Length: 507
Image (cartoon, rainbow, N blue to C red; front, side, top):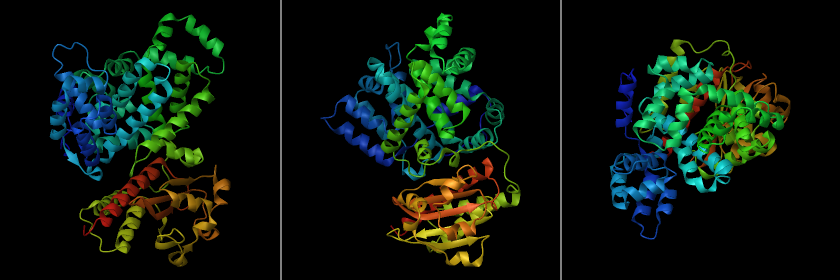
């Protein structure tokens, strides 16, 4: 989507721009929904279930139903209700008016954020809908759409999202300060205003109103939830505060809790922020923390199995590895961060990787550009290995900052459990002193001889559903900073796009 050259700085201007934004829809989802609408055997519930895989379509239908509700005083709380108001003919017309793109052309921040929304919907359905069965539709659709006010923002201004991610998650800067600098207005206030303007379900509005206008109540509940080792004392404290007890039993809180769990786990399963949401959910459900954590992990795994995430990060991936290997640690960047010249080189290399049609005549040229981009991103030692069709060999294709012998390296994945797992599906493993002894023993000796430090990144990359490349990189063996890990991840995304474009050449 085109992005504004000069982002708005006032709430009114942001509302005007974001309300006018048209979210793109992946072509495969668009076609599936079109067929469902034309199938006379499908019920409204069947059609709604088909639409839920594309949050952009769900939002468009709900917004239009609530905008044209006429005599309906209350906004539609579910997609099935919205479709009933619109009628299938109007829904089909709306679908035809949507912007349809190939999935890889949709802005990555939008796809990533909508994956978080799908994950939140799974958490809400698994944790809360069963206990509140009569309200399962409100819980399901409310949790899916809770982050909807952010979708047009990340679609039209992806550079603001990336800057926020780098500064708040990477460097640990205060969120409100960064948001005022980037947007001119507090982000949550913008979300509340847009949710009200779109007449989103009331539970969504209530959630944002709590975060904007009644944070003291939320803070009080979070403090009480910390005492999860003493449930009797917690209950006594709730009995002494009837207002807090009544608030804590409101079913609308389920969608806020589900999104808090999904967003915080997307950043880090072990961070204090995620633990706070777990404790609060445990207090809400009157469930012991270990039991709740098991349920949350189960729902995350189900979400990952259900929703394809080509080139995206799903929190469930981190559950496959020791958590310390996947943490985004808030620490000082590693020495010698990228200088301005290196940053410009990195942008140039990434632009070449993202170019369409592919500018590369062969795989060697593509991997050379990938290696240069990773080097500019701060990786001082790098090995790019290609997998053969049977995954029986890994052959070095590019070696940077390593002895000349590294260019001739051949690895047999059958001899390493870590390599087999990385070749089975795309994934990332980060070695730190905390997990070095456990993981290093499972790596080939020839690879360990090249990278002699205590910090290492291994990332496997797929093309057309099969892992074709393995990256091994470090910053001289020293500790990675959050900025270095983020730069590595963003470069990998560019490489994935380059591989996909290269595979389609000549088609």
